[in-house]
Image (cartoon, rainbow, N blue to C red; front, side):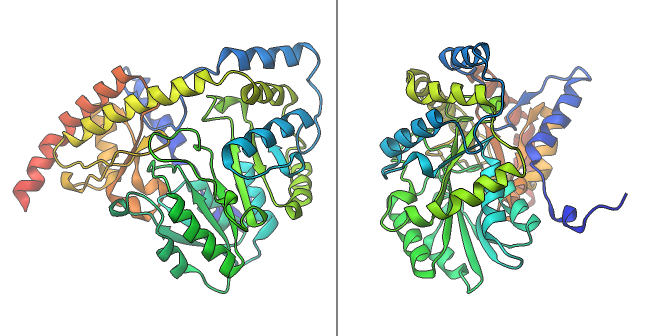
Length: 395
């Protein structure tokens, strides 16, 4: 069978492949600690689950409005207005099954063949994949450890050309946990206004933050009309399997997004949307408790990794990932990830799963129990210490 040429331009999400390899190793009887998947290990809060059940019982099993049920769009608008710092009306909210459709629809609606899109490197791999798939030109903006894994607005500005159409930002960020400051975002906004660029702001981790503040770039002057805000329920409410996300879009993009939904998924599950209404309007205690538990896990893994020769690890300000630099082991991130799985039973991701800048990095997700994180650090030390000693001796 001959595939369309564009299929050769589409990428993948390596975390799922790494998890499959880890499960295959487990099937042989080996113990494996999973730190590769970016998924909260908590159950969806009971009040949200009960709301989903009630919706099913009262017949929410049919098609729903293309862009979302009115009750959820209103709840999202109210929540975003309160938390993101700019006024959001329900008619600017588009509900979709997960966050990825927002990326895909933004590219399809805006990017012509050869248009340039600036995206973070390291960054979520689907950004580059979708840019390439729709025929755009992907332009990587390096995110460096020496800058605290914050996007450098001056470096971003240097990448803008006459073909630049869209800029993607992600704060708090996957895979680094970096958080852009208000000053960073003000400078990025100035670049966008000067060059008439659209910004895709991925704010899916916006409520998982430990230091500083989460600032939505759409709240800055002149930015709401040129920003697509991507958010959802997967991370904040431990609802990854429910597939519920949304976009807040400029008025001109509501109809294009609606048509893309009609032509692809038709609508988002009605019962899932009612669960989303409860998530936003019900008690928020579970969110606060989850973030505090993630904070404790963050400190545990950062302190543990920094105690291992050959590894340096920044303390992330948000999300639930660390992105340690491991060049002191004498191996690349991909080589060390392979050794950790095979020799230590620790499943992590090579930094290159998120871009070229991550060659000498690994990504660990600390969305796992403290007990498992402590054991993963112990196993990592066992594998890495001899490597680091040999690397020092070879210098």
